[in-house]
Length: 441
Image 1 (cartoon, rainbow, N blue to C red):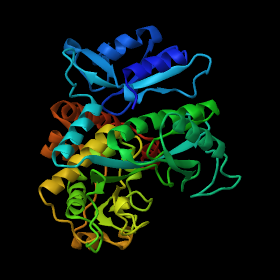
Image 2: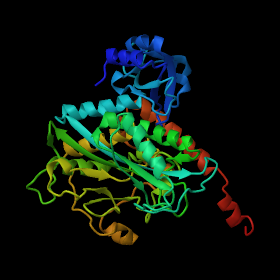
Image 3: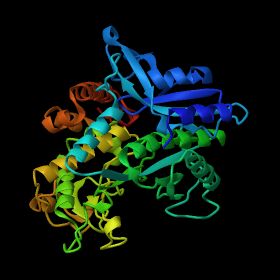
Image 4: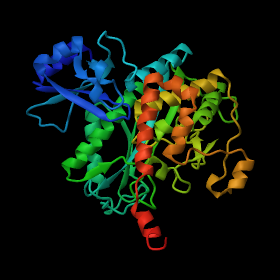
């Protein structure tokens, strides 16, 4: 853990010239401004003011003054910047002018969810996200770099060096990496962050997305976290493993249960399933997100849980059955273009609701849900996620749960922003429509 004095010492000893202060807007876009080393002590003690009215989803112009307060524990040197003029970074909490947490700050909303968990006796909310992405020749199109497939290690996988340098950069920034490999789609890749406490992992996920793009740019290519950039191929997901601990004890584990799941784990999973459609606007927040969430491409749309079956929305991994520390659930619907702070926050709130209200968890669905007919799924009571951003918005507008999880400010602003996205999209004329209808209607 780095404190203010340690940050000041590192900056002086390493002759760091600039320190970039990062924070996140409502939709999860990273924002940044830089201070010089001479201004760092002032920034650490008092924060730095900025215009909140210019940040997506933040304040109106008549009440726009905001303060970015650096969190010294997040200080890192940016490894891709020139070594002769080092640049550091810290992630900030956003405060109001009177020093109170700003309710429109996604990082604060995750902290609020974590406090709820702590008040219920849970010391740790651990998450382990698996972010997938594509490499393309440039940002102007989708020309792939390779035709490799899942776990391929062949000359087709020309991005091995890209992944290697990305992993090195991530670890230099204090982000532990578990796996890196080629994914199912052509030119699609995955680097998995080792699980940890949710606030740090949300910070790490924001850093991860920037590092992947920076290293790609260094190689003259483009990396994208767009959920579904290629028609007919798998989209990119952010499967998120999660568990709750009391001290060093996994609250999800029960050695006497046939599934090794405690009552807390079952309530948590039931809560995720119950509220999945309501929080869809958070974990799948873009029009393009719903091009990924279609049956047949490993993107789960059916609200059920399983142990081995990846067609279900939630999976309880069986890699180490019966091992207490490894017991967790994997929520498979988020995509890597989400806001990780809000995504982790609403997942946690949903799970805690399930625990508090003792939601009943049905038996697991171990068959391939894609193979069932609509009537068979209906007969089994298996419901689906929203099919479009428009559907997700409609459900979110009716959700008192979501309003409570996000707070009035983010809830209202986010629904408004997403409605504008949907309206812009649904009123467009696409080339598909012109090709299909113009010559025959």
